[in-house]
Amino acid sequence: MSSDPWGRVDETGTVYVRTADGGERVVGSWQAGSPDEALAYFERKYDGLVVEIGLLERRVKTTDLSAKDALTAVDHLRQQVDEAHAVGDLDALSKRLDKLVETVEARREERKAQKAKQSDEARQAKEALVVEAEELAQSEQWRAAGERLRALVDIWKGLPRLDRKSDDELWHRFSHARSAFSKRRKAHFASLDAQREEARKAKEKLVAEAEALSSSTDWGPTAARYRELMTEWKAAGRAQREHEDDLWNRFRGAQDVFFAARSAVFAERDAEQGENLKLKEELADEAEKLVPVTDLKAARAAFRSINERWEAIGHVPRDARPKVEGRMQAVERALQESEEAEWRRTNPEARARAEGLTGQLQAAVDKLTEQIEKARAAGNTAKADKLQRELDGRQALLDQALKGLHEFGG
Image (cartoon, rainbow, N blue to C red; front, side, top):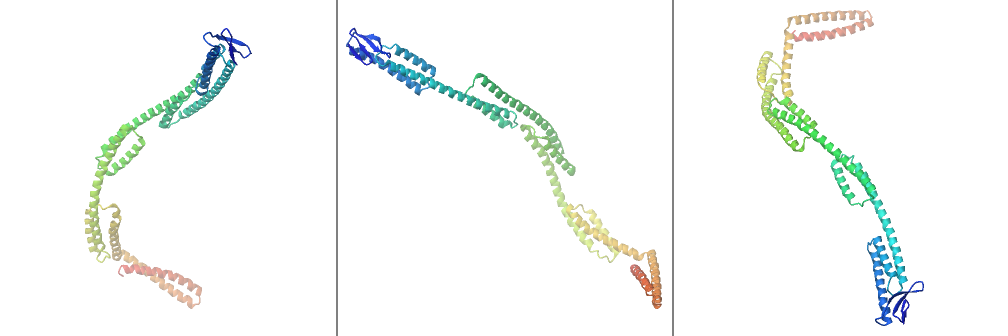
């Protein structure tokens, strides 16, 4: 008979293992060798169970083995331990399996909590995406909002799924926001296309008129109309991109043709008017030599000759016109003043009136002088002073009348 702390072999070769309650359980028989060899064989069976339990413990700790698979493996090993044909501390193995079950359950709760946390984070993330998408659905920043919505879809795909009901509800809101934005954007660009088509039609008409006016020589009104056309062009808005540049080039080209022709004509006219100015300045120099007037008749004839040559000369530059014409007008005024003076000097009726008035004033002055002398002689100073004031007024009128009479040569 042979034994160790966990088992024994009796004289018949029957092998026993000691149980936790102090009893024994037959695990096999051994007839081929010594009892020590029998115990060693069944102890090796025990060691095999120890190895398998150790491997499972490591898998639970170091891999992502699911709780379900781990517990299935534990149950399988527990059955092997309970029915084991082995010698060793089978109770210790059962306790290790019990502890392993606790570890698996704890790991399952931990993973459950982690999954719940991840699910909550995913829910919050998706709700945030839905809120942003619904805000973007009202945006009119069509390009930027569209790009951001596409980016949100990629972010959504990278998030974990929630429970079906929650995930479907959030996805419905998210999808509805995208559809609403797409619908608004489509309507916007459809409206924009309609506006651009209207702008194209309006600009086609403006181009046609601009091209028709390009050969006009009615410079002022045509230039004014081109300015009006430019205002109408700006107010018409932009046409489609494929039409806008071509229409503008035609419109601008027509204007360029007109204004180039006008500039050429104006340049030629300016050169001609510059020459005209030189000629009129020479005539103004010649006219100014007639002043002061000494021989009115000769001066008038000379001025008529100068004026005839002046009228034969064309226009001068607008900014130079007032000065050169002013010089001629000054000479003409001098001639008119000379004529008026001559007329006054030679007019018999005017001379007679002037002589009559002078005589009347001289008689009044003489009479007042005589009255003043009498008043002073009588000692009436007040009357003399009053008459003196009246005399001063009459004397002033007489002096003026004598001056006018002198102009008649009197």
